[in-house]
Length: 292
Image (cartoon, rainbow, N blue to C red):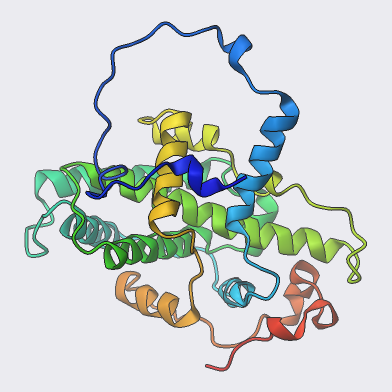
């Protein structure tokens, strides 16, 4: 299945995710029970869809997450960090000048929504208890990745502009994608480490590694599951389905936004994490930690 086809044609004005769809007259629909695809088809779609979040076997992306897992938990995302995040998104996409007071009505609204989503995801089971233990800085790392994706989107489509209020959609979908990307990588590493190094462990359903969009739709309190799925696929399409983040990019955005007394780890994971990621014998030569 060509997943790019699911997002449809990319319009020249780049307004799919950046502007709400026109309201369509409500049409009579068949009962949901008669329109549902067979379970086998839905499972195939779920697996193909989830595979977007996993890199190729030769990718070095796992090295970044191994390093970031050593960042301790308890890091606080201050209101200043949240306001700065909102201001940057609006400056890029809503035409709000970066010099505008952070107390402007639109920035306050976006900052409040960002704070709400971060709070809800920290309280809801977006991340499994095991993953929270092994990756205590999940929320901070996911926020940085979401900012990287929003910034990358702007660089790839510099002339694109959104309408007022599009910052809500951009933040939510970018944060959801970043969270899923981390979930899929860390969870797959954990499950693979529990199996044997020779690859004889049973296949892991990729769709079981990430939170479903139904869950994110409930957290958003604004968008339905179909709307959120459409926005997600369009966002991924705009990024050309490239979610890879280099250590250098992450470190740059971390230092720019976090503004906390915590540096990005330079060293390899400590031995106590080997049970989570697997021993060095299980790692291929391509998975070595790059020189910094």
